[in-house]
Length: 303
Length: 332
Image 1 (cartoon, rainbow over the protein chains, first blue to last red):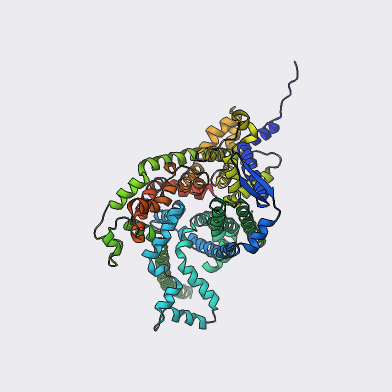
Image 2: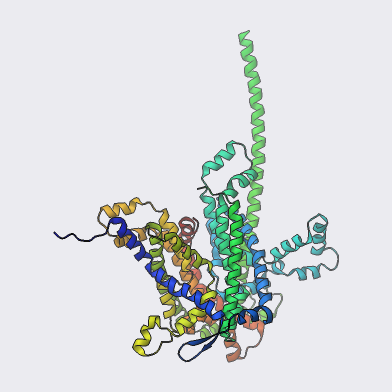
């Protein structure tokens, strides 16, 4: 009998593994890797669209120079997007951790409350988000009136300005106060940006073994100590997941993306648009790497 | 002597006992009060945040019933005095609501099926098989989540505008074809696992499959089931929580998506999101309604119409969905 060349079980499984991921592998190579190279290529050239296809002419770093030295608004928009992100991310993380702690207890109507908290994730269409922001202004004037308005209404006598000054006298710095007031002003956008994060934190809280809490209780730890010594270290790894999610999510909806889109499809300046996309992506990734590197050093990994 | 000691002890102990009971009672009252205050605190905060979320939504719904008079009457708040359905009639007419919504849902639904199929396959592949370069390739999945789509939007646009994979198309028809304005770019990308947020779905499936016990597959192997049979008829059925999670996410996000719809020039009759974006302009042009406040009322009606199917799906699948998200863990 002729010996048939056959694969061992582990070889078969290797082949099957590749077969399972094959569709994604093809797509990733065709759409992501190729596109990234093309974006870099576009950013270094002048692109003209013809009847069949497009033609490139090499211009070197001209587009980059233009974006950083001559373009009217790119630098401002990029900076403000980055600042918005840096300001919002810690707020969203702390808020969602806080809410997850609240929602993790058992109480009546918990399912309903969770459903409501997840609603913004479901209603994330561009048009709906815009309309909700406008409506938030109109319906909840008390909540979302700007700090300017509050200052104006407080111009006579005792008002919010007076209290802010009061806190200012209590050794809390003015910047910190502005930050908190600003956070309260943007409560709608913060709440609606933290749906997924809350769910991630709830899942993390539920995965903490209850024996740990029992030990803490027997050793006589107070609730406060239990939080900082048990709960917080255990959810630390998920903070990184949440930061990545939040940063990417906030960048997708930032003004830089709109600028890049408009530059490409309204002004037909494809080279410049590629520069905008590339620079903003590099900035986002740099922030992510920095923050995650810093936090993962302090993170305690249970497993 | 012995008797008196016993008496003394019992007397002393009973006094001690009384003291402890009193102490316990006081502590119980203090604890009860503390618990009540904490509960009240939690209730107030949760109610407040729910209001922040629901307030604008209720506002939009209420506004969509306002008549012109109500919109300008500062005394009218949330409850319209002269409710009117005129906004809805107009919005339904201009948006061509029913056909657009059905087509939009059909489009999102078919893409959802493809997402589930491809992403669960890839997630399973990463979770259960060992092959060279696996961790590097899984790193690529994470990269896919992190890289914003707008970085690659231009090349995607160019690729599908002059669609010519490996020169096959131009060899047959003589010239590359233009796929803009058709659903094919999105279908192609979704089938190849690069659709809207596919990276996240792959990640979810991967985490879930890794959490399932290996014994299931071993039993299947012993009973003579092949790899593909095991995957389709055993593993995928066990992965129902994450299938539901991904199904709701992808259906809703696809339905809401305007980025890809605009990028690939999807016709307006297929995407309700782009219809909404042009609703105000259409009203201004066709009916000469230039008043910003009134225009907003029509927009609100349109948005309520767009939300209805999504909210219905969410309400029906809500319980399984939230449990699925928690259990199937986007978490590790």
